[in-house]
Image (cartoon, rainbow, N blue to C red):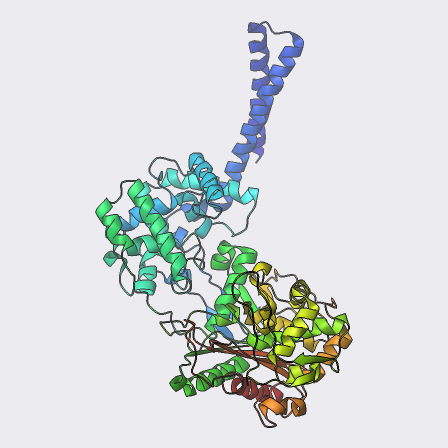
Amino acid sequence: MDKLRDYLRAAGEDLLTAADAIGRHLRLRNAAKIAFFAFLAMGAALAATAGVFYATTLTLYGKDLESSDVLLNNKTTGITITDRNGIKLYQSSDSSNRTIIKYDQIPEKMVFATLASEDPEFYKHSGVSWRGISRALYKNASAGATKEGGSTITQQLIKSTVLEPTRSLLRKGQEIVLATELERRFNKQDIMEMYLNGIYYGGNAYGIDQASQQYFGKSATELTIGEAALLAGLPLGPSRFDPIINRKAAIDRRNYILNQMRSNDFITDEQLNQARAEDPTIQPRSRNIKAPHFVFYVLNQLRATYGDDLVDRGGLTVKTTLDITKHEEAQRIVTEQVNSLASRSVSNGALISTSPVTGDILAMVGSTDYYNSQFGTVNVTTSLRQPGSSFKPLVYVAAFQKGWNDKTEVDDTPLTIPQAVGPAYTPQNYDLKFRGKVTLRRALSNSLNIPAVRVMQYVGLQGALDQAYKLGITSLQQPERYGASLVLGGGEVSMIDMAAVYGTFAREGVRSKPRAILQVSDRYRKDITVPSALPTEQVADRNAVLMLTSILSDNATRSEIFGASSPLNTSQFTAVKTGTTNDFRDNWTAGFSKNTVTIVWVGNNDNRPMGNGVDGITGAAPIWNKYMEYSFTKP
């Protein structure tokens, strides 16, 4: 550093002498000389600062660029996800376990797909492409989505192997310095080989050969053009474009890259059409993941919060809210019940259970079998489905806040509501009977539809939606689509949102918000999370919610329709509501005890109607009952 200071001092003195000589030669006045000198000094200062920054960056990281072995094995940490008790749910493959293949073994089509996807000007720049950055910004802004990255392949290699996965101007500057230096030390083929062997492709795949084995069950040397394009699309968003989790997004990304390959003359029209027509067979995910729907739900949350770099290469340890013992029991109950209904055209089921006090997700069963090739990877707990009559309590609590109570009477008589477009709406009770005047307690306990529609008319559409949003519903954002049938579950909601709603009921109107993550630690075991405070907002009147809870726990009153010994009746206190859509496509049971909220769904992912008779009592309710009884023994 002493030599560097002496050099800069000498350079400054030389600059002063040179500036004065140039000023005399140009016959500049004193003021002009000062301005001219200031301009030169500023440039010199910037150059000197850049030189110091370049030297400092190489001092810190230059040793990581010594060889490909050093570079690729610089980071050997994956991500570990555990349940609330520290039981491991998932651990990504250590990057040191990758399979290295030499450049001459890598198919040309894989190189072309990577160039088209990440860096078409790779062979023209010296590590950084300002033109490429500008083009990427323009294309992404025009598309309204991230279609193309601005970093070169060399920069991405540096990001994934050398630098810490944080976003800052300092890190970007270091990335540019190291990319430039890497290009000075290695040729383009070496850099491409390191990139394809070092980049993360999602799941447990580091490097192209491991990725090819994971997704297609074969070596990278055997890839088709379409398969190569699909894999080349993964580094931009390994989870977002995962063909197991989101096949459509993966195919769309593949087709975009194929078009880019054609635009750059890497393939012919015939090859383009053939590759676009490919229907790739994707290997099922390794079965060494516990609670896979929950794990990928957590990974998506982490990516949204911290970004792909930190999640994929930061060596994070994540402690979640899940109780794997409760989850596995829930999975067993759901699968067993759905299997018993197979002869009645029921193929799938889901369950989410939370703590109403904390919002902690204790169990998340997204389907009967995550590895079912037809629909297993779809997480129904986060999907939008019609909730049927399990939505009624949201509207009833709005009516109670507006002035009605459980003793208020409404007419259970024929009702016809004219519609602005189409035929009039004529709701019917499940048993097609009319009961005359009924109290709201009797109407809700026995899930009578006509009285519920009259409650909806009293509350109003906007009033019902406003209450739903306050309670935790995040969908239902198109009011023009809904009418009076909203109270009967005519809009689509998610199970996780309904867990928020029923959790709020359990907290007597204080907002409950499901959460999945308790703690995130970096590779040095330093916590990087800020503990989230429990919600304290009163989003529904306490007395109105207590009245609703009294109705939903009134087994004697609901016996008129459901019988005294239905699965809705439990050994300890619970409040519960069933829901079945008119066409038997969705069947729900939603309820809570003092310590547990549980939402259950059964049906078919392709929206096929279930067999007649699969209703709230015979479909979802037995699952709900068994899990709630289990929860009483496992606080």
